[in-house]
Image (cartoon, rainbow, N blue to C red):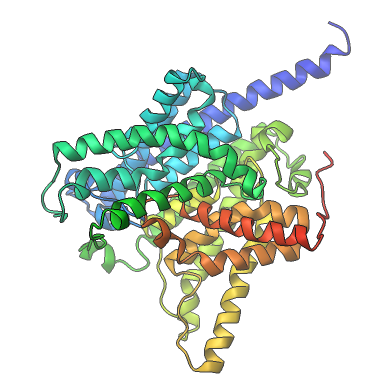
Amino acid sequence: MSNTDIPLQAKKHKSTFSERLIRAYPLFISLFFLIASPIAVLYTKEWDFFDNLWRILTSPSKLVTDYFALGGLGSTLFNAAVCGLFANLVIYVSRAKANATILAGYMLIVAHCFYGLNFINMWPSFLGVLLYCIVLKRPISENIHVAFFSTALAPFVSEVLFRYSIGKFDASVTQISAVGIILSIVCGLAIGFVVPALLPGTTAMHRGYNLYKAGLAIGILGIFIHAFMYQTLGVNEPADIIIDNPNYYSLPYAYRGFMNVFFVILFSITFLVGFILNKRSFKDYGKLLKCTGYGTDFTDKFGMPLCMINIAIYGFAILAYLNIIFILPEIFPQLPTGVGFTGATVGIVFAALTFAADGQHPRNVLPIALGYIALLAIVIVICLLSGFDIPWTLSTQAYINGLAFATGLCPIAGKYGFGYGVLAGLLSAMICAVTADMHGGFVLYNGGFNAGLTALVLIPILDFYKVKPKHDDDI
């Protein structure tokens, strides 16, 4: 072997090692859910575990359906474990190249298993993408991430299957019809053909400044679906499911203690493994934090061990932020009461980490978070001067979810600078509570849709006024 071959061989070894680790880390998370599930059952005394799991699987799941309230803590974790293990199996069987995009698709699946995605409603669109690959002779291994992303329309599948063709939903009885089964399969397969066609075009629209690029594509599709089902056809849109779960609502901050311990253990293990495999050092983490996040695959540049360190540090930052905003209404009684560790809140922790190996890090996400805080400060001042009640706070569910996905705008902060990152976060916060109405809650990637719309507005304005990017990646 010549000396010139050594760097190439070293790079290949690094790539192969990272690919194996990318496959292993999602499996670890799935098994972590599985282990935590029976512990959660004992913790909350969820003795009706199987009934709760069945209710999760057989209920309409429009955004945001809190699976902790609909089912329970243990049954929700089990749902995430089963869906996650299925995703792991697909990754292995398909022999898809394990990269940052595959990791992102997995994270989005398990994230939404807490508020809208389950093992029944994820199948039709997933199979639709596989059928698309077969019919058009596309490599299945290169489209697994698309199949993962297509599950964002899982609430639409549940709606058609359990309510649309029947009428009124009754939570005490499992209702299903032959028409519903046929419609859900047909619609799911159709989604599988449409989503792959939409992704490239909508990505070009925001030019890569929204990391949650599937959100814009599927959000737009959701608008058409919702309009056709409930406006064009003149069908009365059903009300949200009323969930009566006294045990869940009686607990302060909804499982705050359990979920804090859960995430501390998860992130600690992630950090320790990454730190050890990174030769017991933070080597190159400073370089990673200097990346703009625009078109940057951290697994390719730095390797998965360093990405695991980033996931852990970023995860701890998210956890700290959540715990702080949960107590703000107690410190400032003028603020309305928010939520705690609901199913949706737990889910968005994983959603916010989706691209921690592909562009996100604490430094370029911070300005986006400050944009949300800045908007709240503006609203507070206006309301106090006008005598209005303050309508929302940072722990209002829509704004927790909105910020989690608005972090996908971090390339704007990375490329254009801190101030424009704050502006992007502020604009995103302005619309995060209304975008779900546009698609009727049929799209789980509502935050990515929101971020995509924000990028569509902000980037052309920056171009028109000839605002040039300040930073580029030089590594």
